[in-house]
Length: 216
Image (cartoon, rainbow, N blue to C red; front, side):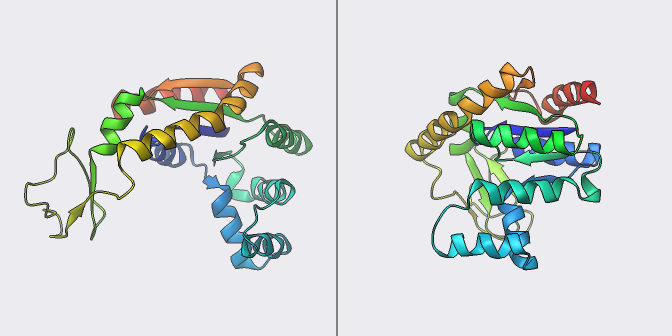
């Protein structure tokens, strides 16, 4: 089962991707992870990618797609994988489809976790994190103590500097602009699904699981 998972900041995509990865025994990968791994390994593709990055340039699609193709055929992807942050364009989606055909693998499906903007703002603007142990808190769902000291480790609880309304709204706008064309691509292919992210973590996962089980 090969999955492209979309979700705006604050919808809980990371949590759901982790659950899917664990329960379906498939890795979650991103283009960033693959680039870092290739550079660390010193592979030919990694060396080429590193040169672009050092020059402050975007790594070309052909290198990214070659990395994805190499990754897809590794043993830990035999049951599938979760692809995060790719594709972003029609050209990338077409090339990804060609890779799957070339290796006689099932097509990717695309699932988006959706949450209304008002709820996303509440989730993000209310979130706080312990600077020491990383424990998460939220003003609306899991408030931090009044003294802002983490009861788990005694660390200081803080908000992220970029968690302000203007920044969050801009991040949501960019997300919607970047994903609209790809969502339309998979909708035309009949490979696009949407899941309501307003439910509990368990409820959202149950709905995702129902879709994924139909693909196997």
